[in-house]
Length: 82
Image 1 (cartoon, one colour):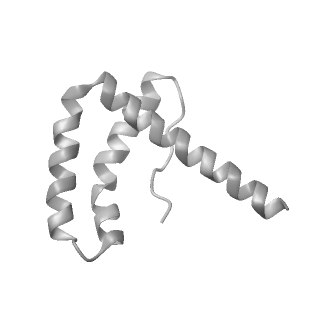
Image 2 (cartoon, one colour):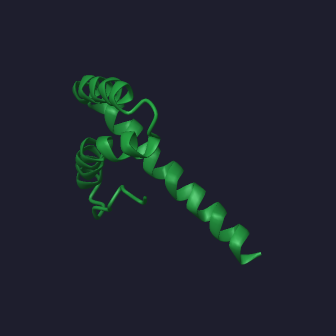
């Protein structure tokens, strides 16, 4: 049972982090074009390698998550878990 509970907690954590990212982009629409452009370029460059695509966008995502957490007085976290 512990394993199932832990998996559920991890899923909630990921969802919260994604909401923080989403909410930051909604509050700061000036950041959205850079995200979109990067994701489109990386999708072309890494069509067959999802892991490489994910790693390549980490730097931008990290910077946005850092700013979002700083604005809320939250400690910074490493967004890469892979």
